[in-house]
Figure 1 (cartoon, helix red, strand yellow):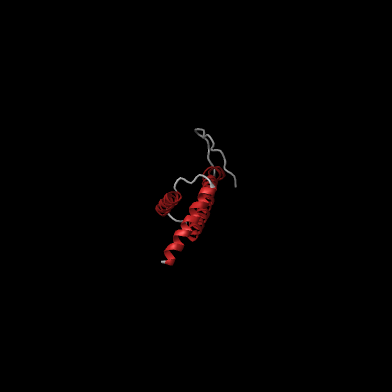
Figure 2 (cartoon, one colour):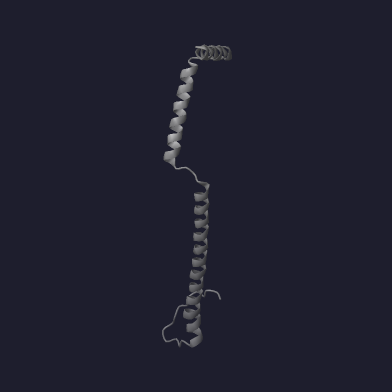
Length: 111
């Protein structure tokens, strides 16, 4: 059933049952069906949103606070690595530092 554009009533016009059914009953039924369809669509969207929320919960995504603390730890680790390496600018210098550290460890183990 389609929506009928409301008519302009004329003074003195005799209104019959068919006119009233078309103008009132049928248009109200049409609008009610639209509202029911929209409610079903909204319920379907609610279920989909619930599914997405459940999926996100299952992914166990860390919260921002946890990520910030991990970044802080990584920054500390990077600082420690930079401190150990000092001002190493090339692989030869790095290789020399590694060799010296291995020698120092060997000396400590032998004592």
